[in-house]
Image (cartoon, rainbow, N blue to C red; front, side):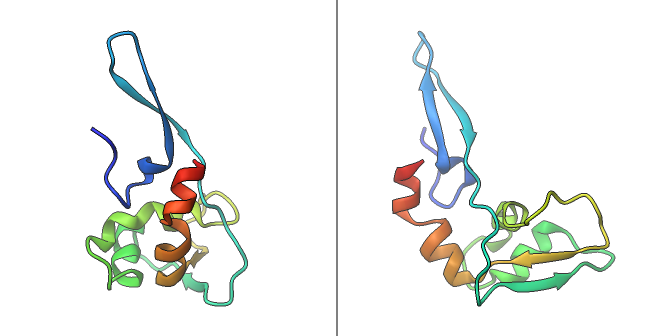
Length: 106
């Protein structure tokens, strides 16, 4: 079964073993880009990537499921809970990160 559209796994390579089972490889994350419509979010107690995705990507169906976009979009790995997170706009998420052209390139 192929990954669903909008899944972070749709950007992986698939390889099959001798029995025909599909295994997913590593995926190439989108990564941070300096964009005019990128938002900065100062983390407060109780924030989670799941909750932030739901808030910032609210117009999209199942917005909370895009937590991985926020995690991938950081210039540095997330290790400090008192930091500022960079959140791409809904436009960048739908037109660039989830684009069919990027999926085919993966």
